[in-house]
Length: 134
Image 1: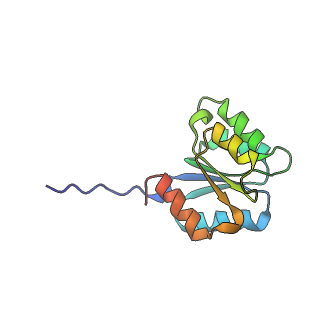
Image 2: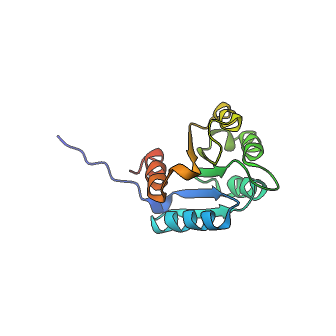
Image 3: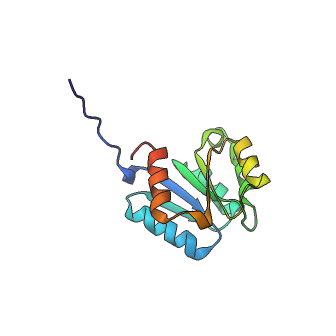
C-alpha cells in the first residue's frame, strides 16, 4: 500500500536573513518571499539576534562579517538561549577555509555558502531540503 505524505508548505516556514549588504539581503528576502516563506531581514548581528529570539525562525542564513555584532558573536549569543541552542543556521561568507567557518562548525553549523559560489536558486533548494520541504 502507498501512503502519500502531505508536503509541508513553505509559507508556514520562517527564515531570518542576517546580511549587511543591502542588495544581497533584498535579493535573498525577495527570493524566499516569492518561494512562499515568511522572511525577516536583519542588517547586523545585534538586530538578527533580537529577531531570532523573538520570531524563532525555522532557519537562519547568517553572514559572518557584519557590523555592530558579527555573525560569530551573534551565533555564540544565540546558542546560550534555550531555543537558540538548537536553531538551524547556515553561514554566508566570502571567506574560504576560514577559522570563522570552523568556529561555526564548533557551534553546530553544518552548512555554509561561499557567496561567490552560489546562485539564488541553489540556496533556496538547499534551505528547502534542510527544512524537509523539498
